[in-house]
Image (cartoon, rainbow, N blue to C red; front, side):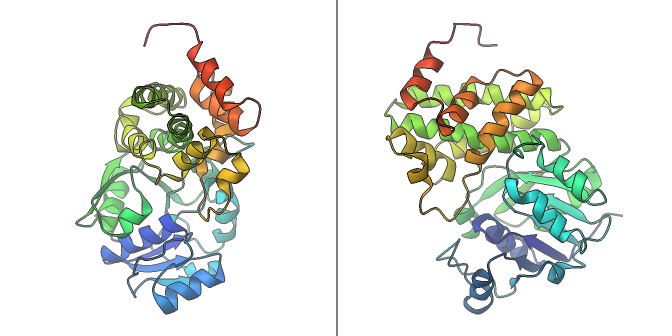
Length: 333
């Protein structure tokens, strides 16, 4: 018998968490949204709007916000939308209230600094009794919140559970495609953020559309090599959670990561590029972890390495571009 979910706890009330809370409400679920910021809780509950992170979007009055982990106890499933570098702390905070066997859908994209762990590995270490799933794919929060058509990957090793989760959150304009390869979905989501910074640098430097296309294509090769080396499947990252997300994130300044790269390419400092942003550009934090992880598993990732070096101040933009263009010629495959 397939599972039925009626209540959902969304952990993290940034733009993406708020958009996913709306998705769940439209799907008929009873939604509770956890916000770390008390002012966000008040905005959602009294104004039915998250003016801090998703201004201008009317929220379903049924979306209730709370600021205590205990208020999310007993949910049928959870969507954790905490930024990657804070996921471990978030999961520890919610460990006392998540019942064993409850699905935990991870929606943040990144690799943990220091440990170089994927998000599902962090979950396994902090909430080993939760049933894991990964939601990833080409999706801008503002567009999803407005009800524009979106398709994503929902990866879960338990096919029956994955199908039930997909049905639970699906709507007329939100289509989750089920998969079993969580590693591929996670690597696709983490690495594409780093590559989006590279594409932003190229755009900011005025290198043209040919260079942009080359970065996406060669970057996708790096992403695929990493996914396969970590146990994922090439066909997974050739889908929505890899290639699809890469194309979206690398093609619009609406992408937080591309906008950071754009500023760097225009000669601004990283501090200046990040100034005033209320949402996290995950690629900035993940870039050093992606570089270190690629080195650990013996995967060549020159574009990701160049981005990490620029962000760390180890090399300037021009030197990084020259370094990439002067690499030895080789077979495309």
